[in-house]
Image (cartoon, rainbow, N blue to C red; front, side):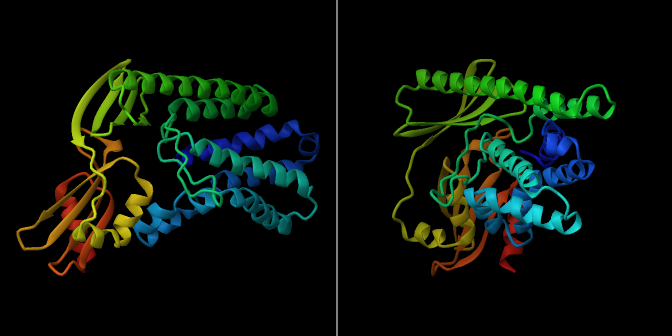
Length: 328
């Protein structure tokens, strides 16, 4: 989810914790749990700092080890350990448990969007992405804001308020899961030989981006108001054993792209200056007829990488600027 949603979820966990008598009867614990819950709700995304290094490192590692099973246990120890130095009189067990809940909730809700996480590490490095909730969901965010508002104005006790909120959200998630399953079933009814249906939710509840893969084709489509509209069709071509593409795959940018994207097409061409270009395009994020998430590798005639880029670009001009900077 987005940072703002994780923040309000942290506040909600801090309010929910007042149902715990150990928290409710101790002002210091109330304060400590609130701080720990807000930090815990953000902690797994501290790997965003990897953007400062380069896109390849960020794409390959974001929502990776920081969202893993060991991290679920380690983050609360780090946060509680830091707070204990400031307020040593806190109840460590209860503080750790509520901090753990904040961290766990962060990772749990992240698996429901199309980006997903590597939440099963170290047992599996595969991305768990259920494609049910958009990165920013207005209902989830605004319902938290509303609950925080009525708590802040003394209109209801925080524990009960947030307990009711999360019961409502459980049913909301179940509804969204059901809605996605209906979209997948609809797509498979139109293309019975489909082997994969990749679904990306949008901020509109009745609109979903689709990539439907059959043994021969990749169909880019959209489900809107229970109707599926098909846009582009590409041949489904596994990455070939080609010297140029093999040389390009060694590059860190393309390698990072392939570690993340399950639905893409590729193309290879010779540029006017004699250099070679390999381009991989993620088909899941179609926007106004454009596919903004790409990986590009340019090589010389000796198959040496001279420039590469992976990330989001919304025009060919911007892409060429980024490739030019990467060459320097």
